[in-house]
Image 1 (cartoon, one colour):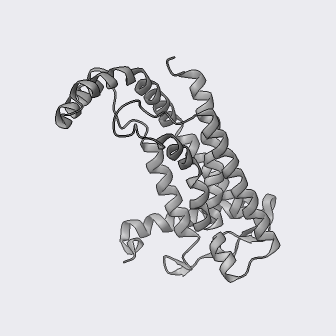
Image 2: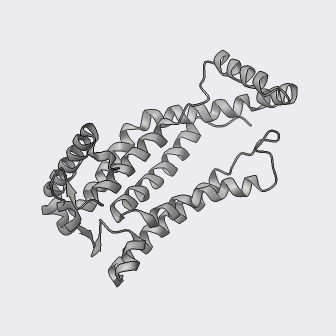
Length: 245
């Protein structure tokens, strides 16, 4: 079933296609063949700029969770055997603190939606009944509409290898810096307090690089820009909203 056959989603996809293609045409005098790739980067920066207030809320939520951690441990020690009572007490604690346990989830949802749209735009041969002109664009010779696995399957050239190698290297380096600067916080008690959990949570930083292999290069560019932005923004906000000692 094609979910983009549903009229509202088809209209959304066509609008995104028109906007991205128009931006690419505006950038062609400056970027040439890389205009569509630059358009993806600019769209990513626009999305991330719009999400700055949500990023601030996310930093505040992280600070709040760290501040409430000792009280959460007390609740787990007191009501650990009664899951329903523990859940009620936990929600009451967040309510008393005027906080939400789901604060900071919006950036993940928005980014997933944007990646999904970019993935679709550079995957479908037709958009709203007309040929997809975005598929003719590339970045230094690497097609924007082809994933790394797809390129390997159909025959990969040197230009594509270099572009993908640089993109994946940036994602992995950013993931490693993030892992070192913001190590996983594993609770002392509770269902997550199991051997190896810290290593597992740290390994999750590298999943973006794995995911990037399966998406078109355009979506991988979005991931490159957004992981870099996220690291810089998180570092700045951590200075503004430091975690309690």
